[in-house]
Amino acid sequence: ALTRRVTCPDGINTVTNAACCDLFAVRDDIQENLFDGGICGEDVHESLRLTFHDAIGISPAIAATGVFGGGGADGSIIIFESIETNFHANLGTDEIVNAQIPIIARHNITPGDFIQFAGAVGLSNCPGAPQLEFLLGRPPATQPAPDLTVPEPFDTVDTILARFADAGNFTAPQVVWLLSSHTIAAADLVDPTIPGTPFDSTPELFDTQFFIETQLVGTLFPGTAGNQGEVESPLAGEIRLQSDFELARDNRTACEWQSFVNDQSKLQSKFQQGMARLAVLGQDTTQMIDCSDVIPVPAAPNSTAHFPAGLSNADVQQACTTAAFPTLPSDPGPATTVARVPPA
Ligand code: HEM
Ligand SMILES: [Ca+2]
Ligand SMILES: [Mn+2]
Image (tube, rainbow, N blue to C red):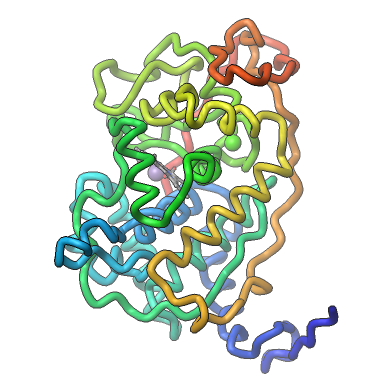
Protein backbone atom coordinates (compact mmCIF):
# COMPACT_ATOMS: atom_id res chain seq x y z
CA ALA A 1 0.00 0.00 0.00
CA LEU A 2 1.17 3.52 -0.73
CA THR A 3 1.71 5.72 2.31
CA ARG A 4 1.18 9.39 1.72
CA ARG A 5 4.09 11.51 2.94
CA VAL A 6 4.05 15.18 3.83
CA THR A 7 6.91 17.62 3.50
CA CYS A 8 7.94 19.28 6.77
CA PRO A 9 8.14 23.10 7.15
CA ASP A 10 11.93 22.79 6.72
CA GLY A 11 11.23 21.93 3.06
CA ILE A 12 13.62 18.96 3.24
CA ASN A 13 12.33 16.17 5.44
CA THR A 14 9.25 14.14 4.65
CA VAL A 15 7.19 12.14 7.16
CA THR A 16 3.94 10.22 7.21
CA ASN A 17 2.55 12.34 10.07
CA ALA A 18 3.26 16.10 10.23
CA ALA A 19 3.33 15.90 14.05
CA CYS A 20 6.72 14.19 13.68
CA CYS A 21 8.42 17.13 11.93
CA ASP A 22 9.63 18.77 15.14
CA LEU A 23 11.63 15.65 15.95
CA PHE A 24 14.21 16.30 13.23
CA ALA A 25 15.60 19.24 15.20
CA VAL A 26 15.67 17.11 18.35
CA ARG A 27 17.45 14.36 16.44
CA ASP A 28 20.08 16.74 15.10
CA ASP A 29 20.64 18.25 18.54
CA ILE A 30 21.07 14.78 20.07
CA GLN A 31 23.50 13.61 17.41
CA GLU A 32 25.57 16.76 17.62
CA ASN A 33 25.58 17.44 21.35
CA LEU A 34 24.99 14.08 23.05
CA PHE A 35 26.50 11.54 20.66
CA ASP A 36 29.56 13.49 19.49
CA GLY A 37 28.41 13.74 15.88
CA GLY A 38 27.00 10.22 15.64
CA ILE A 39 29.31 7.65 17.22
CA CYS A 40 28.31 4.47 19.08
CA GLY A 41 30.07 5.28 22.34
CA GLU A 42 29.40 5.60 26.03
CA ASP A 43 26.58 8.14 25.73
CA VAL A 44 24.75 5.92 23.24
CA HIS A 45 25.23 2.91 25.50
CA GLU A 46 23.97 4.81 28.55
CA SER A 47 21.02 6.23 26.60
CA LEU A 48 19.96 2.72 25.59
CA ARG A 49 20.36 1.54 29.18
CA LEU A 50 18.15 4.46 30.28
CA THR A 51 15.31 3.37 27.96
CA PHE A 52 15.22 0.13 29.94
CA HIS A 53 15.55 1.61 33.42
CA ASP A 54 12.70 4.06 32.77
CA ALA A 55 10.42 1.56 31.02
CA ILE A 56 10.79 -1.39 33.40
CA GLY A 57 9.59 0.81 36.28
CA ILE A 58 6.09 -0.63 36.28
CA SER A 59 4.61 -3.45 38.33
CA PRO A 60 1.00 -4.62 38.10
CA ALA A 61 1.84 -6.90 41.03
CA ILE A 62 2.70 -3.91 43.23
CA ALA A 63 -0.32 -1.98 41.89
CA ALA A 64 -2.55 -4.90 42.90
CA THR A 65 -1.61 -4.26 46.54
CA GLY A 66 -3.09 -0.76 46.29
CA VAL A 67 0.23 1.08 46.03
CA PHE A 68 1.36 2.99 42.90
CA GLY A 69 3.25 0.47 40.76
CA GLY A 70 5.03 2.87 38.42
CA GLY A 71 4.11 4.27 35.02
CA GLY A 72 6.59 2.39 32.81
CA ALA A 73 8.13 4.35 29.94
CA ASP A 74 6.93 7.68 31.30
CA GLY A 75 10.11 9.67 31.90
CA SER A 76 9.87 9.27 35.68
CA ILE A 77 13.59 8.47 35.93
CA ILE A 78 14.25 12.04 34.70
CA ILE A 79 11.26 13.87 36.22
CA PHE A 80 11.95 12.29 39.63
CA GLU A 81 15.66 11.84 39.06
CA SER A 82 16.64 12.77 42.61
CA ILE A 83 14.64 9.75 43.78
CA GLU A 84 15.04 7.15 41.03
CA THR A 85 18.71 7.61 40.12
CA ASN A 86 19.49 6.80 43.76
CA PHE A 87 17.87 3.36 43.54
CA HIS A 88 20.72 0.81 43.73
CA ALA A 89 20.02 -0.71 40.30
CA ASN A 90 20.02 2.79 38.74
CA LEU A 91 23.38 3.93 40.10
CA GLY A 92 25.37 5.61 37.35
CA THR A 93 22.30 6.67 35.36
CA ASP A 94 22.52 10.17 36.87
CA GLU A 95 25.25 11.03 34.35
CA ILE A 96 23.18 10.37 31.24
CA VAL A 97 20.11 11.90 32.89
CA ASN A 98 22.08 15.07 33.53
CA ALA A 99 23.36 15.06 29.95
CA GLN A 100 19.83 14.67 28.54
CA ILE A 101 18.02 17.26 30.71
CA PRO A 102 19.42 20.41 29.00
CA ILE A 103 18.60 18.99 25.55
CA ILE A 104 15.02 18.24 26.60
CA ALA A 105 14.77 21.82 27.86
CA ARG A 106 15.59 23.15 24.37
CA HIS A 107 12.66 21.33 22.74
CA ASN A 108 8.93 20.71 23.13
CA ILE A 109 9.16 17.05 24.08
CA THR A 110 8.31 15.09 27.24
CA PRO A 111 11.07 13.26 29.14
CA GLY A 112 9.38 9.92 28.47
CA ASP A 113 9.36 10.50 24.72
CA PHE A 114 12.89 11.90 24.80
CA ILE A 115 14.37 8.91 26.62
CA GLN A 116 13.00 6.42 24.08
CA PHE A 117 13.77 8.71 21.13
CA ALA A 118 17.38 9.24 22.22
CA GLY A 119 17.81 5.49 22.70
CA ALA A 120 16.53 4.77 19.20
CA VAL A 121 18.57 7.54 17.56
CA GLY A 122 21.66 6.50 19.50
CA LEU A 123 21.30 2.83 18.59
CA SER A 124 21.25 3.84 14.92
CA ASN A 125 24.88 4.92 15.31
CA CYS A 126 25.92 1.33 16.00
CA PRO A 127 26.64 -0.71 12.84
CA GLY A 128 24.50 -3.83 12.70
CA ALA A 129 21.64 -2.38 14.75
CA PRO A 130 17.99 -2.46 13.68
CA GLN A 131 16.04 0.73 13.02
CA LEU A 132 13.83 0.89 16.12
CA GLU A 133 10.19 1.88 16.10
CA PHE A 134 9.47 5.22 17.75
CA LEU A 135 6.00 6.17 18.91
CA LEU A 136 5.42 9.76 20.14
CA GLY A 137 3.04 10.76 22.90
CA ARG A 138 4.08 9.78 26.45
CA PRO A 139 2.51 12.18 28.98
CA PRO A 140 4.81 13.37 31.79
CA ALA A 141 5.07 11.01 34.77
CA THR A 142 3.19 12.20 37.84
CA GLN A 143 4.87 9.89 40.39
CA PRO A 144 8.22 8.13 40.71
CA ALA A 145 8.46 4.41 40.01
CA PRO A 146 8.77 2.22 43.11
CA ASP A 147 12.21 0.87 43.99
CA LEU A 148 13.28 -2.69 43.07
CA THR A 149 11.65 -2.86 39.64
CA VAL A 150 15.00 -2.85 37.77
CA PRO A 151 16.76 -6.24 37.65
CA GLU A 152 20.18 -6.59 39.27
CA PRO A 153 23.06 -8.72 37.91
CA PHE A 154 23.02 -10.78 41.12
CA ASP A 155 19.31 -11.66 40.76
CA THR A 156 18.45 -15.28 40.03
CA VAL A 157 16.99 -16.31 36.67
CA ASP A 158 13.70 -17.02 38.47
CA THR A 159 13.62 -13.48 39.83
CA ILE A 160 14.59 -11.91 36.50
CA LEU A 161 12.01 -13.83 34.47
CA ALA A 162 9.30 -13.09 37.03
CA ARG A 163 10.15 -9.38 36.98
CA PHE A 164 9.90 -9.15 33.17
CA ALA A 165 6.68 -11.19 33.19
CA ASP A 166 5.16 -8.83 35.75
CA ALA A 167 6.33 -5.65 34.02
CA GLY A 168 5.11 -6.50 30.54
CA ASN A 169 4.17 -10.15 30.10
CA PHE A 170 7.58 -10.78 28.56
CA THR A 171 8.32 -14.48 27.97
CA ALA A 172 11.71 -16.09 28.66
CA PRO A 173 12.75 -15.87 24.96
CA GLN A 174 11.71 -12.22 24.85
CA VAL A 175 13.94 -11.49 27.83
CA VAL A 176 16.81 -12.97 25.80
CA TRP A 177 15.91 -10.73 22.85
CA LEU A 178 16.22 -7.65 25.05
CA LEU A 179 19.59 -8.76 26.42
CA SER A 180 20.98 -8.26 22.90
CA SER A 181 21.47 -4.70 24.18
CA HIS A 182 24.50 -5.95 26.09
CA THR A 183 26.36 -6.25 22.75
CA ILE A 184 26.90 -2.47 22.94
CA ALA A 185 27.58 -2.20 26.63
CA ALA A 186 30.13 -1.76 29.35
CA ALA A 187 30.04 -1.65 33.13
CA ASP A 188 31.29 1.28 35.18
CA LEU A 189 30.26 0.21 38.66
CA VAL A 190 30.23 -3.60 38.79
CA ASP A 191 33.99 -3.42 39.28
CA PRO A 192 34.58 0.26 40.02
CA THR A 193 38.35 -0.16 39.59
CA ILE A 194 37.90 -0.66 35.80
CA PRO A 195 35.07 1.63 34.57
CA GLY A 196 34.07 1.19 30.91
CA THR A 197 34.83 -2.55 30.78
CA PRO A 198 32.74 -4.10 27.94
CA PHE A 199 30.49 -7.16 27.98
CA ASP A 200 31.79 -8.30 24.57
CA SER A 201 34.86 -7.60 22.44
CA THR A 202 32.92 -5.22 20.13
CA PRO A 203 31.00 -2.68 22.25
CA GLU A 204 30.82 -0.32 19.25
CA LEU A 205 29.05 -2.91 17.06
CA PHE A 206 25.55 -4.32 17.39
CA ASP A 207 26.72 -7.81 16.50
CA THR A 208 26.26 -11.34 17.85
CA GLN A 209 29.62 -11.48 19.69
CA PHE A 210 27.90 -10.99 23.04
CA PHE A 211 26.01 -14.28 22.60
CA ILE A 212 29.19 -16.10 21.53
CA GLU A 213 31.45 -14.75 24.24
CA THR A 214 29.00 -15.26 27.13
CA GLN A 215 28.94 -19.00 26.25
CA LEU A 216 32.72 -19.43 26.66
CA VAL A 217 34.32 -20.83 29.79
CA GLY A 218 35.14 -18.07 32.27
CA THR A 219 38.81 -17.97 33.24
CA LEU A 220 39.57 -14.59 34.76
CA PHE A 221 38.37 -11.42 36.40
CA PRO A 222 39.38 -8.37 34.32
CA GLY A 223 39.93 -6.32 37.49
CA THR A 224 39.33 -7.34 41.08
CA ALA A 225 37.64 -10.53 42.30
CA GLY A 226 34.69 -10.67 44.67
CA ASN A 227 32.35 -8.11 43.08
CA GLN A 228 28.63 -8.71 43.58
CA GLY A 229 26.92 -9.72 40.31
CA GLU A 230 30.18 -10.53 38.46
CA VAL A 231 31.55 -13.91 37.40
CA GLU A 232 34.74 -14.84 35.51
CA SER A 233 34.99 -13.84 31.85
CA PRO A 234 36.89 -15.53 29.00
CA LEU A 235 38.92 -12.47 27.93
CA ALA A 236 41.25 -9.93 29.45
CA GLY A 237 39.46 -6.59 29.48
CA GLU A 238 35.98 -8.15 29.27
CA ILE A 239 33.53 -8.27 32.18
CA ARG A 240 30.76 -10.84 32.61
CA LEU A 241 27.56 -10.32 34.59
CA GLN A 242 26.38 -13.23 36.71
CA SER A 243 22.88 -12.71 35.23
CA ASP A 244 24.14 -12.98 31.63
CA PHE A 245 26.15 -16.09 32.56
CA GLU A 246 23.10 -17.73 34.10
CA LEU A 247 20.65 -16.74 31.34
CA ALA A 248 23.07 -18.22 28.79
CA ARG A 249 22.97 -21.55 30.68
CA ASP A 250 19.45 -21.88 32.10
CA ASN A 251 17.26 -24.45 30.33
CA ARG A 252 14.50 -21.82 29.85
CA THR A 253 16.75 -19.42 27.96
CA ALA A 254 19.91 -21.23 26.73
CA CYS A 255 18.62 -22.34 23.31
CA GLU A 256 17.18 -18.92 22.53
CA TRP A 257 20.50 -17.41 23.65
CA GLN A 258 22.50 -19.71 21.35
CA SER A 259 20.08 -19.10 18.45
CA PHE A 260 21.45 -15.57 18.06
CA VAL A 261 25.01 -16.75 17.46
CA ASN A 262 25.89 -15.89 13.86
CA ASP A 263 22.30 -14.84 13.07
CA GLN A 264 22.50 -11.08 12.57
CA SER A 265 19.08 -10.81 10.93
CA LYS A 266 17.37 -12.57 13.86
CA LEU A 267 19.31 -10.34 16.25
CA GLN A 268 18.00 -7.26 14.47
CA SER A 269 14.39 -8.35 14.09
CA LYS A 270 13.99 -9.70 17.62
CA PHE A 271 15.66 -6.73 19.31
CA GLN A 272 13.42 -4.43 17.29
CA GLN A 273 10.34 -6.39 18.36
CA GLY A 274 11.39 -6.53 22.00
CA MET A 275 12.18 -2.81 22.14
CA ALA A 276 8.88 -1.94 20.45
CA ARG A 277 7.12 -3.44 23.49
CA LEU A 278 9.56 -2.20 26.12
CA ALA A 279 9.39 1.38 24.85
CA VAL A 280 5.64 1.69 25.41
CA LEU A 281 5.20 -0.12 28.75
CA GLY A 282 2.43 1.63 30.67
CA GLN A 283 1.39 3.72 27.67
CA ASP A 284 -1.82 3.79 25.64
CA THR A 285 -0.46 3.22 22.14
CA THR A 286 -3.81 4.14 20.55
CA GLN A 287 -3.03 7.72 21.60
CA MET A 288 0.49 7.72 20.12
CA ILE A 289 1.82 8.76 16.70
CA ASP A 290 4.23 6.59 14.74
CA CYS A 291 7.32 8.72 14.07
CA SER A 292 9.65 5.84 13.21
CA ASP A 293 10.60 7.55 9.96
CA VAL A 294 12.62 10.10 11.98
CA ILE A 295 14.96 7.35 13.27
CA PRO A 296 18.06 7.02 11.04
CA VAL A 297 18.70 3.74 9.23
CA PRO A 298 21.76 2.15 10.90
CA ALA A 299 24.82 1.07 8.93
CA ALA A 300 25.05 -2.59 7.91
CA PRO A 301 27.04 -4.93 10.19
CA ASN A 302 30.71 -4.79 9.28
CA SER A 303 31.96 -7.90 11.04
CA THR A 304 31.22 -11.61 10.98
CA ALA A 305 30.76 -13.99 13.91
CA HIS A 306 34.03 -15.39 15.26
CA PHE A 307 35.78 -16.62 18.37
CA PRO A 308 38.23 -14.12 19.85
CA ALA A 309 41.87 -14.99 19.14
CA GLY A 310 43.08 -17.82 21.32
CA LEU A 311 39.60 -19.34 21.80
CA SER A 312 37.56 -21.84 19.79
CA ASN A 313 34.59 -24.23 19.84
CA ALA A 314 36.57 -26.22 22.45
CA ASP A 315 35.99 -23.38 24.93
CA VAL A 316 32.20 -23.35 24.56
CA GLN A 317 30.22 -24.34 27.64
CA GLN A 318 27.39 -26.02 25.78
CA ALA A 319 24.05 -25.37 27.48
CA CYS A 320 21.38 -25.81 24.78
CA THR A 321 20.67 -29.55 24.58
CA THR A 322 18.71 -29.58 21.32
CA ALA A 323 21.10 -27.80 18.93
CA ALA A 324 24.87 -27.78 18.51
CA PHE A 325 26.87 -24.57 18.88
CA PRO A 326 27.65 -23.19 15.39
CA THR A 327 31.16 -23.83 14.07
CA LEU A 328 32.95 -20.49 13.83
CA PRO A 329 36.41 -19.30 12.84
CA SER A 330 38.82 -17.98 15.46
CA ASP A 331 40.48 -14.60 15.03
CA PRO A 332 44.19 -15.03 14.23
CA GLY A 333 47.01 -13.73 16.39
CA PRO A 334 47.74 -13.51 20.13
CA ALA A 335 44.87 -13.81 22.64
CA THR A 336 42.39 -10.96 22.32
CA THR A 337 42.47 -8.23 24.96
CA VAL A 338 39.44 -5.95 25.00
CA ALA A 339 39.93 -2.19 25.28
CA ARG A 340 37.77 -0.12 27.60
CA VAL A 341 35.04 2.15 26.26
CA PRO A 342 36.29 5.73 26.77
CA PRO A 343 34.20 7.80 29.20
CA ALA A 344 31.82 10.33 27.63
C1 HEM B 1 18.42 -9.17 33.40
C2 HEM B 1 18.32 -7.92 33.02
C3 HEM B 1 19.45 -6.95 33.09
C4 HEM B 1 20.43 -6.79 34.03
C5 HEM B 1 20.60 -7.57 35.32
C6 HEM B 1 21.30 -5.74 33.58
C7 HEM B 1 22.40 -5.28 34.27
C8 HEM B 1 23.30 -4.35 33.80
C9 HEM B 1 24.46 -3.89 34.51
C10 HEM B 1 24.87 -4.32 35.92
C11 HEM B 1 25.11 -3.01 33.71
C12 HEM B 1 26.40 -2.24 34.03
C13 HEM B 1 26.09 -0.94 34.74
C14 HEM B 1 27.38 -0.27 35.18
O1 HEM B 1 28.04 -0.79 36.09
O2 HEM B 1 27.75 0.77 34.59
C15 HEM B 1 24.36 -2.91 32.49
C16 HEM B 1 24.71 -2.12 31.43
C17 HEM B 1 23.91 -1.94 30.32
N1 HEM B 1 22.64 -2.45 30.13
FE1 HEM B 1 21.79 -3.92 31.20
N2 HEM B 1 20.85 -5.28 32.38
C18 HEM B 1 19.73 -5.98 32.05
C19 HEM B 1 18.94 -5.78 30.93
C20 HEM B 1 19.12 -4.78 30.01
C21 HEM B 1 18.18 -4.41 28.98
C22 HEM B 1 16.82 -5.08 28.77
C23 HEM B 1 18.72 -3.37 28.30
C24 HEM B 1 18.18 -2.57 27.15
C25 HEM B 1 17.18 -2.89 26.41
C26 HEM B 1 20.03 -3.11 28.87
C27 HEM B 1 20.94 -2.21 28.39
C28 HEM B 1 22.19 -1.99 28.94
C29 HEM B 1 23.21 -1.19 28.29
C30 HEM B 1 23.13 -0.57 26.91
C31 HEM B 1 24.28 -1.14 29.18
C32 HEM B 1 25.62 -0.44 28.97
C33 HEM B 1 25.70 0.94 29.54
C34 HEM B 1 27.08 1.55 29.27
O3 HEM B 1 27.87 0.92 28.55
O4 HEM B 1 27.34 2.63 29.75
N3 HEM B 1 20.22 -3.96 29.92
N4 HEM B 1 23.27 -3.73 32.57
CA1 LIG C 1 29.16 -6.07 20.20
MN1 LIG D 1 28.70 3.36 31.20
